[in-house]
Image (cartoon, rainbow, N blue to C red; front, top):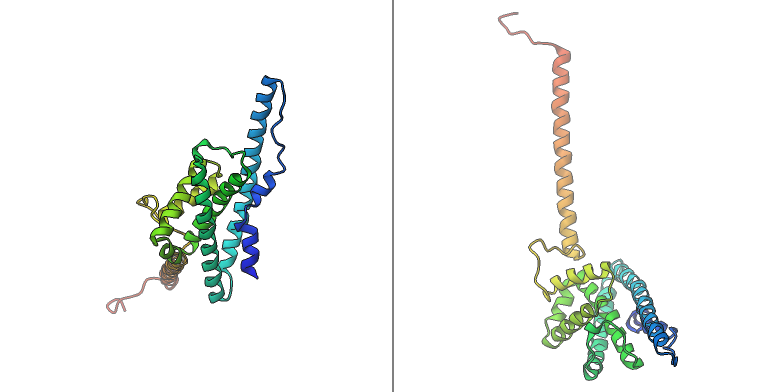
Length: 243
């Protein structure tokens, strides 16, 4: 049930469907007016798409984070496995259509062909979804990614999505970090995946050790201060000779 709901919410190109409400270009006979109108509508369409995509990314991120808190570990693994598999299936079918159409993502605009527009939307929406799973479940996703056919597919989708140039800053940062996690791009010297559950556990343990260390130092400091205070209260002690 959860899997089917997530598929409807995140795998299907909902952004594309919303774009159907954007008015089509006018067939105005006045040349100059037609050019201005088409340009403004093109800009509006891309702005609408970018905002809708940003909203959808927020929903996807929330869904991935919520999955981490599922109490049933087996259910969580099954859900992640099925979603990742579904994303791969969508991207595989989509790639064939896009490459057949010889669409260049560096044009940074949506085509007029509705079917092609839908397939481009599927890539732009599902690629960051996959990459986010790579950050939260790196060990499972990396194992899947290392399969030659999957690696070639994801590398293509990664480049295609970034070349299109429509993601907001938050998504770009996530894509960069996930790209390093999967080694699609070279890792920086200070690379660290804070979303990896193992890294999160190690970081928590390190934090607890540091807190315990600081607590001990504070306790020892108070003991020394107390000893000094007691010594001042008792005054100087007399030696046996003085007695």
